[in-house]
Length: 89
Image 1 (spheres, rainbow, N blue to C red):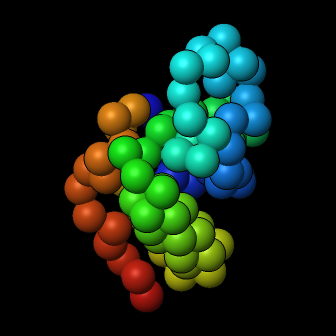
Image 2: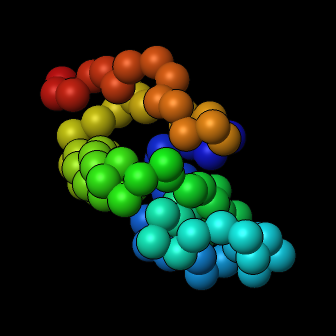
């Protein structure tokens, strides 16, 4: 599990060490959520799902930097848990 507030970068492809160990994945479906001390490396079922997930994460990350006060986490299976709340004071 990795907290959304810890994510510093979302990167397409298989660029992290864990991906190097597992060669059987697909580059065009893979992406990583990079935090300061670790990453969460994922592979989407389709290119469209990878693009949508990455676009939504970009929006959430942008919002976190300016408006959000509380956030939830993403489980290793990639399912968003809970709700994002407290948009504005």
